Length: 478
Image (tube, rainbow, N blue to C red; front, side, top):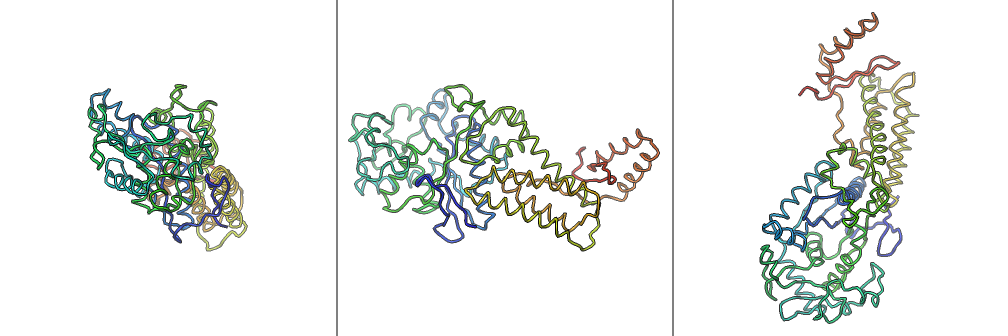
């Protein structure tokens, strides 16, 4: 079954066919590092991480680019307020982004993380191409504007009414030829000199406009036509609309084949925003919740559905996560207690194949991680039932169960760190046997002391109707 993607440009699902067979060129808009990252940033990062993981699961080589807008009005304003250079501010919050999202939430690193300030040359060259093609003009102070009426397809992504746009001055400036025109290069102002955010260009000192950076950096690493360009829904207009205009005005080629946009995060039923004062930073969230649970919570929602965040939603996600974790632990313990007799449980393997097929169908259908997560929960229920029923267990089939479950779970970015059991030492085997004898003699206090000693060594015991089961993991005393 081919992968189908909902393309924002066409407003419908389309079969995914990359420009080059077996390779995906993918660009996702990153953060503007002027403050700590919030759950909205994490939602977008996790959503596109799941999409990337699924493409890789299906055998594609994915070149994944995510930028940092490391020079911007908000960064400059904060730098001036704190008496710093703009780069001090951006570098600090870029570091925090990795600490608060990438590392704790197990987000795969991008192939490249380009920064605006490291690509001024490419940006200037692209602006010059646009000017040369008659789609931009230079003002006396060195400001360069893209002339929107020169690009006949402007508005094709956002479906904006061009006449209506005249009432919304994105960047007010009476010197514009048309009120809808947007800046490609901004002439340096007093605040730029204060913050150190001044760069050379053929038109004078200044800095890039917001939109041009993504066109220049994506083209450098991925070429003039991208397979997938993603970001939050709020970027459709003006950012992505302007990217299309300036890129296609420069190259005459289709800029992006599939546009993808994730929905917003709602906090207790309201859209998260600074104006409502309900921003939830990842730094605060990580103080309260297990990052693995946060990852599962975010990755088990379809990227085009809003994330409804509140304490109850996280608690429900934690219950499901623990159910999955418990199923894996009990399966591992049962594998340890079962000898390989070379047989296969054909019925069990058919069930596993069914879960894999259902998961794959969900993800192929516009990366429906919500449906895929439900399949994973059903798979865990099957594992629990299989492990807890009486009758012969087949080790080889349980090993395949474990392998299939982990492979699917890893698409959602969970249980990659799941620790399979190590072998027991002879002394530990004797301790387990001694504990069983003590339990039979109803000497439970002594039995509990042995259990605790084993736990300190990293040996976790499970008392089941079928007898004691164990898992040996990294020692809890280390």
